[in-house]
Length: 180
Image (cartoon, rainbow, N blue to C red; front, side, top):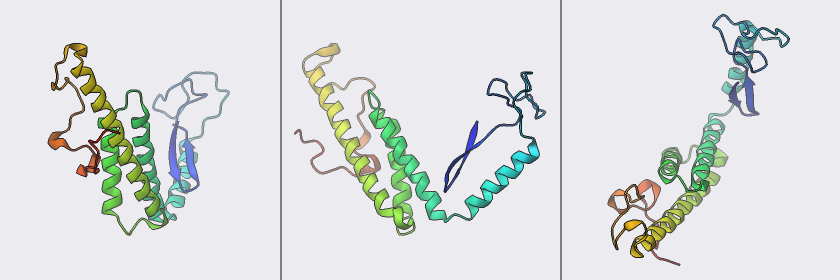
């Protein structure tokens, strides 16, 4: 089942031709599966629902809609950072995307702008801390000869970034390399 975002929240939009979640669409708008006990809305009813949701979305302030997408990028970043092990390259892309929107739309995001800036700063700080902890762990492991590494040798597939940048967006935090 698909959904459509509106300012009042997500609205489910069932796919034509599905019944009870068990059958798939067979292209003619009828349920495949055969029990026929669950009514399937026809194409006209679905079109009316979509049109109503689109009208509701069109009547919403655009800064609210864009800010909501920014919150989605914030959440996506947090999900990647909270994985074990953290998925830093994916988190970095989501953080950079959020940063591009917040910086590029500065002064145009309405009431949510300050929250988005604070959230972006928190994500960047978390990224730097997690990346630093992983690098410290890799350095300690290679210094002690774990996994056949030698002192100062980068492990294949490590999180080393070009140019020594430690933070998404290319803005290194002061003292990011300090331990403590």
